[in-house]
Length: 79
Image (tube, rainbow, N blue to C red; front, side, top):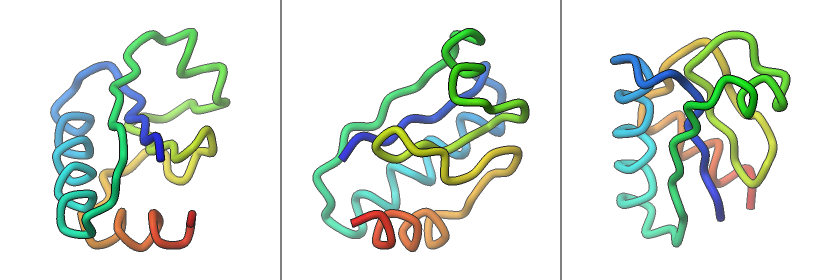
């Protein structure tokens, strides 16, 4: 599973990344977490508000910081 955190590196983006790491760890999921900061790459996903969470190439959330338990639900629904 590939999880991408889209954003400029702002505090909200960093919080979303930490929450994603916590969700992956608590679930024992084998996932690669990647930060995407290039605005062209972010726009290619159609995202206009960051931070955004992308799972296996599909935007699952944008414009808000999901909590670890919310991310865990997204990850389970993606399997």
